[in-house]
Length: 551
Ligand code: N01
Figure 1 (spheres, rainbow, N blue to C red):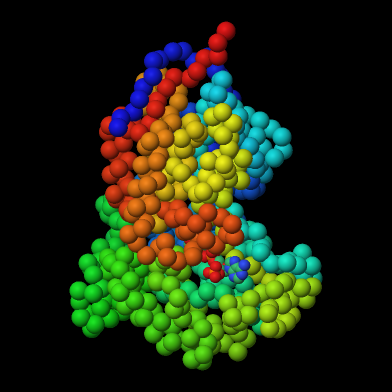
Figure 2 (figure 1 turned 45 degrees about the horizontal axis):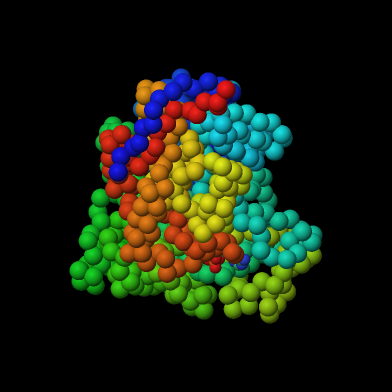
């Protein structure tokens, strides 16, 4: 399979912009800088918020912070930037990450090409003129040769599935759309519904000040210590002294972090050795337990049982009431098949007098009422309800854009049974559309800033290749797309992930197709494939000049 190049002809179509970029988070900011400043393209970024930051703009709930070390969870594209920026904590909290992204926007003079407060709600490919017509909620339409979605993977919060949310007389917060800062919970009766990464981070913080905190848990999570603290000056200096090697090591790691202690199998060592390995990773924090302990925990149920059992034991050690500990300890699914949350004092929060846990698997929530929450067996009164119920992940942000490709094909129809992409970047029938960290790329299982940079660089190279070859359109073949989807599913079927209901599988949104939306071959293998595609002249793509309308 190699790229097909059709006969060249001259394009007469003129667009308002070379490229429209959706979103001004990590992806949109780098895309704008790369395409405008390094490639000389005209670029318009549309951003729904009134500021930059993406995820880090919208998620201001208490406790929000990254869970890959900040010296790694940051841009690598500009050495001066990475040398000069100083993180105050090992894992920066949301306000500091937002300040960083605002600094990047100012440093590279990005704001002048970002149109804020503008939500894109239609994107239609014009077959006759070979361009995208991008429409906004305000009724504006612009044309562009290329559209790059930096809309993210976790940017559309799930619509609350409980009746009566609007009737509640207190205040409701949604973690994924939380713009208020420093909300005061003191003396308040607060509910948190949901115990994923967002709920767990919020619970640990809110517990410190709330009058009463009630946690509604449907499924317990395998949360493990993040190991946060002030940034260690010596560690930071060591990283900065050799930043490019550190970044290379990150890029050559499955998850995009420079960890290197992983051992082949949890089953090939003695119980004592296994325990020592788990203890060391637990104490060191970050994703080390998940990704730097044993290679087979996501593949072999027996290996997974060893780590699941270890985490359950640790939870029991930390929670004083054995019944509460038992409820907090996951039993029904393998570790890592839901995205593992990292925590600080999460389990200790349940030892406080002002915190209680309600099992809504046993007695589900029936409704939000005027005064609180009604479950199958009780009524609870609250002043504040925090919904930490997750996102319409991976596909949700794209399907909200109203994308229509060749011949009127809607992306929502094409993806009716789940996403179909080539390399998680492009879609047959949707020419010149690029999805940064799209479904079926490593995306959320790869350190996001690096995943984003890799994708934006791939897109920039592809556009440069077209430009140099007097070509205008790039589109994957159906054959290449089918093979990619099949390959991604084949890899996922070798893991334990498909057996668990998670947002990785689309299983958290009622009615959503249940299919693994990740490329699980790891970032290094994925990058090698992308490099081969490029080396072979954009293998799997059709490259064509623009269609000139008949006169
Ligand atoms: O969402 P989630 P999240 N009734 O889907 C429960 C990233 N992130 O926002 O498991 C009752 O993980 C649901 O229960 P169940 C990270 O990738 C990163 O917390 O479906 N409960 C679950 O407990 C993460 O994975 C950071 O049974 C309902 C919770 O709500 C992703 O974002 C921080 C329910 C949702 O958990 C999403 O995390 C935060 C219902 N109808 C987030 N519907 C970092 O640290 C849902 N739930 C970088």
